[in-house]
Image (tube, rainbow, N blue to C red; front, side):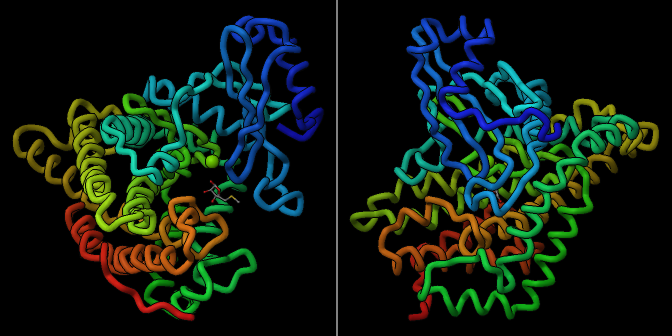
Length: 426
Ligand code: SR1
Ligand code: MG
């Protein structure tokens, strides 16, 4: 996993490398010189190539020794490719058909070859274009329920769980990115912060002065750092999900580690809620995206309900882990008490989810890495209005997470803010 013989494979070197792998060469078909190789990476960290031959295509991802978004001044370990491969392998076992098939991995080159997902598109792009995805809620809730439940203490023995935590513990540089960019920087002066200025200047300053918010984000940060509940994807936003009308694939788990489950579930909800608030900024005539916005909020509700239902079903069907020993919950009385405890567990997880969703929202509006949901709203003032609405909801969700008892409380609050007119600076 060290730098060793690592080298960045640009087009020519990649062509030669793939030509030397008989299985991939056969899958692509034709002469290597005729393969079409295109670099398509639009994420923040890596190179991603699509390679097409006469028979088929593949996707190749290579980690760079630095953060692509910023450049060589921000080094980043290549080992993230190892953790991504490990996570994808585990997710493929636990949620078959919901992650891309793995075709090849080279640890030294920090390079992974995967099936080419076609005609899938990055979900975030589809949401900007107001496209509903009818399979999404069912698929993403299966993915989250199964990957989180089966890697938790509810399904693993204590020894298995500790070994699994150790296997991902080295991915701390990626965790540190999250700890800084999500849980710290947006709430202080940080060189890399940016927002829609001047309109959100006062709001940015207010966040830096809001001690209730600083306590809430610090509690969430501690939970992120010190709660190895399950193998989480760690970056489960709508840019890490590829979709068609009938298929969903979760990609890019390079931030994976054993962390709090609510971080993943909150990421999905936050990104749907941001798509909802951004939608007003994309409409060309009033109400044009009304049906889409309804679908988004319905999906928010389905995601929590579907996840909670599937997770509970897995738990009820037989938990072989060392937590909640069956022998302590014998008979009718034990079964009833255990069921009440399951409900309490889900309520705590819901509160975590609400808080993490808020943190994921605020970082996209004031931190380093923004998202196209808002960024593609061309008129800055309009963008700031959408962003301010999302921040208003997020602040409430973070500071008063327990006041949101149900997912309908979240969607109800979002709906009320749809046409709220914030006071902007500038
Ligand atoms: C410097 S990396 C910025 C962001 O990109 C990734 O997708 C993660 O969300 C990370 O926080
Ligand atoms: Mg990514």
